[in-house]
Image 1 (cartoon, helix red, strand yellow):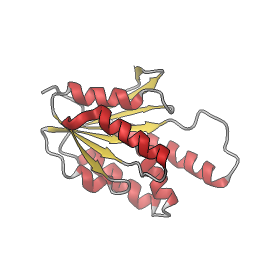
Image 2 (cartoon, one colour):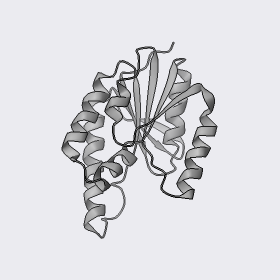
Image 3 (cartoon, rainbow, N blue to C red):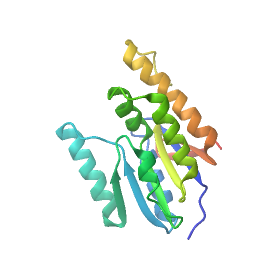
Image 4 (tube, rainbow, N blue to C red):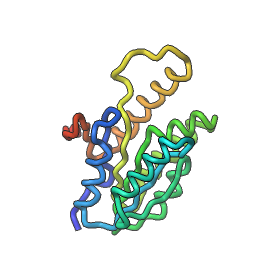
Length: 171
């Protein structure tokens, strides 16, 4: 069983290869793999994307669907597992659009990430490198995502940015 940091944060732009990189880290660990999925399927396109990802991972993964309560899902892991949370961006979207208490949910997520018995790899989008959004909801989301990414990065033992499928260690 390969040693992994307690918390690894993998971030990058959309379709940058960050999820594939995070999955590779999990596979190389030799541990039992748990995938905590935060996506919700609201249309055929997203349904097809989820099905494709499930097929790519195969049966060697235990998948837990947790669009909001990632903290409870993390409590199911043992020290022999590795957990991939994919992704913080969709989780944040679910919290904001569901009009849930952002501070409370964020606190629960951060506490669970750092107290999980298993090594955790969490994926997130870097959304702050584009233009300033033209509406209040998008600006709120962008700002919340930037703050969440900073909070996760501060707690992570390793932070990796992925661009064009190439990982770059930041921490």
